[in-house]
Length: 72
Image (cartoon, rainbow, N blue to C red; front, side, top):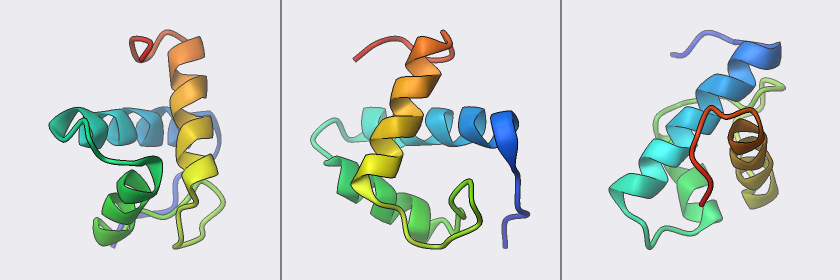
């Protein structure tokens, strides 16, 4: 089971994870990326188990804005 990570580090980590999943299969929807995170037993930044598409998009957008991921 994944330990609960909070704050800035969690957002960075999940942004990178989400982008990696999306790059592995570019046809995946945000919801499908969330489902992959759930299958990996990754908790949301708030400690939940269910990833919403909006949560995945928000994390990807933040990671891109901070320069952690390339745009797109």
